[in-house]
Length: 233
Ligand SMILES: C[S@@+](CC[C@H](N)C(=O)[O-])C[C@H]1O[C@@H](n2cnc3c(N)ncnc32)[C@H](O)[C@@H]1O
Image (tube, rainbow, N blue to C red):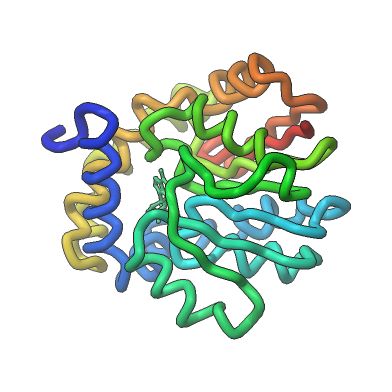
């Protein structure tokens, strides 16, 4: 796809895509996911139980996981994203409800080592330029025994479900996206491409093992359309 080659190129492409999408992101993403995204984020946020003293929600977008982390018992939540327009939307909704928003790059976090008790990332690891580098940054800022939570699209194990799901993402989601969001066709045409190159359930688990996360668990949600990875430092 044009404009997403190379590290800086990809980051710029993603930033401009989410800037265009920011005002309609919530409606478009919920519509495309038939409202299931709320359930998926609720499940991921519930895993903060026992490690929620100080949480960093990376690539927070408009804060939909960040607020749920607070609702599920997190003490303090710092929500961080490199797209100012997405952060602005989040701040308007949840800034006064206790989420602390900030702007910055997930691959180069401005926090000292061992700052957070939990670091989460939802529907975004597919978008970063270097997944391993991002996971290493997440690990660096986690305290000892801190938890990582990753929610993202998965690759269903059943061939039949996988085929229907790819068909939906390649042909129907871009149409829905262009209807519900400004410049939505671009974002929702990019979506299946991001998934194609994403290592998903097995690949992310392998990377987590390589960088030495412990007690790794992988949950398939909605037949593996979405998956959640959890591990401890
Ligand atoms: C699909 S949205 C997900 C937002 C939110 N986590 C949610 O659950 O709705 C992906 C977000 O990741 C952000 N993002 C992508 N790469 C990033 C990076 N390297 N650093 C910070 N944010 C990034 C984008 O700006 C966008 O807001």
